Length: 199
Image (cartoon, rainbow, N blue to C red; front, side, top):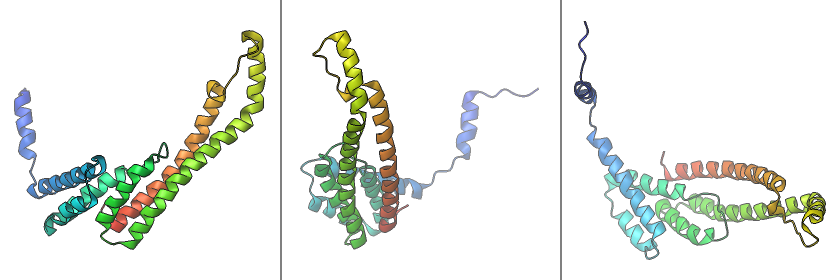
């Protein structure tokens, strides 16, 4: 008959098999510190490019790669399709962070500079798409509005945003636009990783 082991005994057996890798733990801590420095730079108004660069430069050479990776991961996670034109304020800091990490890499500076235009173009295309959809949908909307005026009175107006059919079509079109731009952004992020020499 098999011996029934307690949960405690099973847990002990599992932990005996685990091996602690101090090198990996130290590296993970440096990645985390890099992420924190980049996060502080991006989120605090009083954090300066000069102060952040000074802290980055002060990291010992043997820890620099992991620290840089952490900062880069935070920068990359802040490169996302914008929701409005206010992105430019935050993007300036992301650009500065890229300049710190790039340490004079012209290709990286060019790529990051192009991303600002890319994000602006995305917002313009989004706006154009909404306007085109409104124009295309106008005749159908006028018909619906005429029918609803019979029911609710002559002052009733129907805006495109109030029509579920229009919103469904618009969401589908915007989703396709997002997918196209997200694919390009994903490629750009991979290129940034290559240029920074991180995985």
